Amino acid sequence: MKYIDHIYMNGHFVAPRGTDRQELIDPSTREIIGSAALGNEEDAKLAIAAAKSAFASFSKTNAEERAAMLQRLNDAVLERIEDLAEANILEYGAPRMAAVGRVKLAAANFLDSKEALEQFEFVRYIGKAKVVSEPVGVIGIITPWNASYSQITAKLGAAIAAGSTVVIKPSELSALQTQLLTECFDAAGIPAGVINVVNGLGATVGAELTRNPDVAMINFTGSTRVGKEIRRASIDTMKRVTLELGGKSPNIILDDADFAKAIPAAVRSCYLNNGQACVAGTRLFVPEHRLEEVKKLAREAVEALKVGLPSEADTVLGPIVTEKQYDQVQHYIRAGIREGAELVVGGEGHPAGLEQGNFVRPTVFAHVTEDMTIAKEEIFGPVLSILTYTTEEEAVTMANNTDYGLGAYISTTNLEKASELASRIQAGVVLINGAGFEMKAPFGGFKHSGIGREYGIYGLEDCLETKTITGFD
Ligand code: NAD
Picture (cartoon, rainbow, N blue to C red):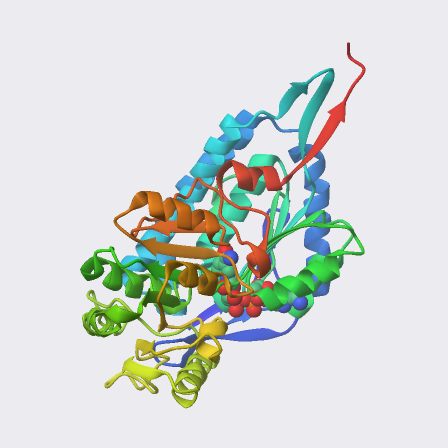
């Protein structure tokens, strides 16, 4: 059994004031594997006070000192790569290879922030004015469960690069991973009070961060629903907010694309992190006259993916994070069937032999129309919806016909056409022909997918205030 009894503030692991605990559950077996102490509003207040007090000196550190800290944070995370990966496997059911990759990605965020810090001009001269970028103040970092390590390190890296101090409220569903990651932060020798981590619920610790006058900014990743609540709660204290929210990303396959490559890639993009990814390409748009071919390729691609225990080396898709989320995915699969979509592969229930955990049958629907629930709502599971178009104009219109605007994917052999389509799609990130993400480039959403940008120089800028000073001439 694993017991987590402490939160982290002012450079120490301490028992929280909060007395509630939360069970830790293995998603592969639904067995209880331990419990974690939950902080409350009082803990959040104390952590904010520690961060505020540390800000006075930390905001005066120079870029070289902070770059050295970011390097140490990267090293400290890599030092514990095996432990962190194990926790990711146990708590999320991530397949081993994915877990190791995820930790490396999380550590690399610190190096990207370091590079941004080294390139950034904190003082510029414009006409007769001296323009200075200063750290914004205490930042409240609130993160979701689906990519806990990298969400936390991206936001923490940007804050440290800027010279801001933080209170981190990670998802209560990632308490085990949070504990280990916090031990890495502690080992990196960052001044006391710069990093504070309070495990707790959104309604208590999260809400305190969003209304506390000593928090200058909230850097949030999570659902659009909670993002809106946070923006509302932040108004009275005029906090700056960076919001990375949900998505329903389109994937447009043009007629000239290499379908044998593009369709399996589309399936993989939708099933990224078992479909529990904000940028999952969940709406696949294909030319109407190619539908039968697409269905065949999609079915073959899905059948080649192994759903299994995270511990098995060839597993590609593990369990869904919680039973509640499993039920939610089942609800959407039933909605697809009920509303008349054609089930190409997958469907309701568990895959054979995996009845004990939150395992879902990877599913593809065809003949999906724009008014269906599965085409509109974020499912957060391995469910791909195929829609058809007759003209490219229609494909772009349908791609944009959503409140979301996070990611978009295009497949075509005509790069000029891809560039033209990319300019017409309302999304913060457009990936062409299976290209990967550039982690130093900005990431964020249009429309209800968010406000602000993360990563690299854009992430750093989001954590800075700008001051113009004149009169030196
Ligand atoms: P969630 O919105 O339920 O929770 C996110 C965090 O907010 C958690 O730490 C939660 O405790 C906290 N919270 C909840 N209510 C709060 C409140 N009233 N005040 C302050 N904090 C509160 O999201 P989730 O289920 O953990 O994660 C999945 C969601 O995150 C999906 O919608 C997904 O698209 C989104 N997401 C977005 C990105 C991105 O970069 N755009 C990345 C990953 C996940």
